[in-house]
Length: 152
Image 1 (cartoon, rainbow, N blue to C red):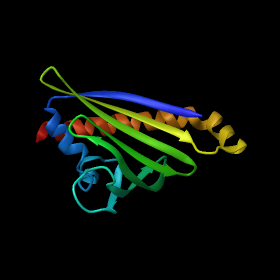
Image 2: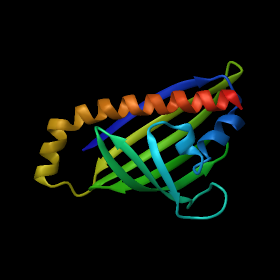
Image 3: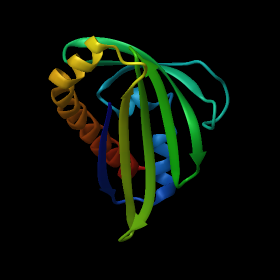
Image 4: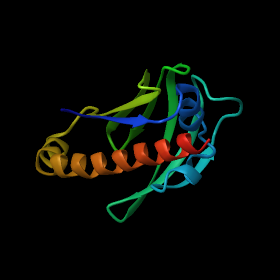
């Protein structure tokens, strides 16, 4: 069972500034209010293979997820992956210049890996609620990325 959300935020800043914000993993906890902390697991600049642990609180519950960059094409796109709790998560950021600024599109997908009967039932019952909550959190992330990029 696959669940996908796609959101676009217009940002009044060039793609290079938007890219600087989304690729600053160590600084993301200061930019995004939804992130509690970041622990870098790899050294060097942002690129394929960059790994970190990200702690977020959602629905009153704190979760730490290991994430990594699976693809990058600066400053046009990047894909971040995570595996957690039997789900494969993919976040793809795409940047497109428009009207003197940048459209930042975030496509988020969650797919169950080897779903059991129980996990399929839980997804059928609670999946829509979870995706609504996730959509709100992602929209807030995009607005905060925009505010940061526009302030650079």
